[in-house]
Amino acid sequence: MSVDRKDFLAKERILVVEVNWLGDVLFSTPAIRAIRLKFPGAYIAALVVPRCRALLQGNNYLDEVMVLDEEGRHKGFFGKLRLIAELRNRRFDTAYILRASLTRTLCIFLAGIRKRIGYANKKSNFLLTQKVALPKGDLHRADNYYYLVAKTKIPDGERHYDFFVSSEDRKFIDDFLQKHDLGIGKKIAVLHVGGNWDLKRWPKEYFASIIDELISHYGADVVISGSFMDHPLAKEISGLAKHKPFNACGLTTLKQLGCLFAKSDVVISADSGPLHIAMAMQARSVSLFGPTSPDITGPFGRGDFSILRNKDIPCVIPCYNLECKDNICMRSISVKQVLEEVEKRGWLKRLT
Image 1 (cartoon, helix red, strand yellow):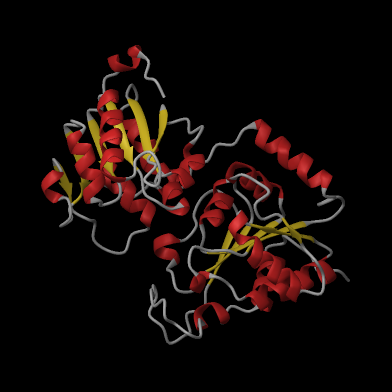
Image 2 (cartoon, rainbow, N blue to C red):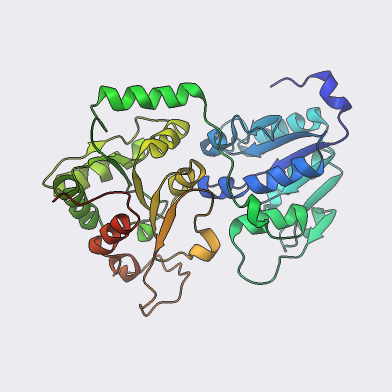
């Protein structure tokens, strides 16, 4: 992307070096908002990996979204030189480095960015000009990012994500639902069945069971959401169910997925990036938490949401034991619990 010469006249040119996962990028949006508030006349850009780019596209608080393509144009030694040249060309004054990374911080240094702000860490301390001590206690991940900018937790009135969708995205989903005869005189329940590691996922047979309940006893249209990579999992779950849901995995972009969530009557998901997209779209959601802590990566925002987790299990949470065999934390959340929560909130009613 070329840079307009008038942008060089801005009071400050700021780069936000982003994190790598969907949920974490959404967690960073209150910090981006805080940077804009702190430097209203600045030119602000974000550097983000390709899979998370869509989350920041159209963000009203950013002037540019740069892609860090570590598997393509920025791969290897010469790729890093290309990245450094691209950054140097934009003449940034300040970089907020949200993820401790020696390689990325070194590129920021070699690009001539004078102010380099990040959390104190052994990897790249020597390259930072402002080392911020991690705040005490187990703060939410979003509060950690915000603290780097504002030296405080996110204020109550600002505890929401920024995720901007277009009128074209909304129309796509309106047409999509009509084309597939979904939500015509019926409620829509969206199930997000994936997750970036298996132990965070609700068991497949539980999803199959709730599909049958939602269709037969609540009269709902059930949609399974996810990326193209989630399609086999969704197909397997559908095969376990007596009643067939609509498998939408891979059929929408992230922006369109957000619009689908907004159109639904309830979203049911484990701890995942799309769960936080649902929250950004103020969708009604039931989030299922097992090995991860809602206090650290749980949903928040302006929407109506519920968090289900069972504390009466012999585990220390958060738990990152990827060798766990029984996954008791997720198995202990029953289909009955989820349906009772949905009914209690008035999102769906059981047929008489």
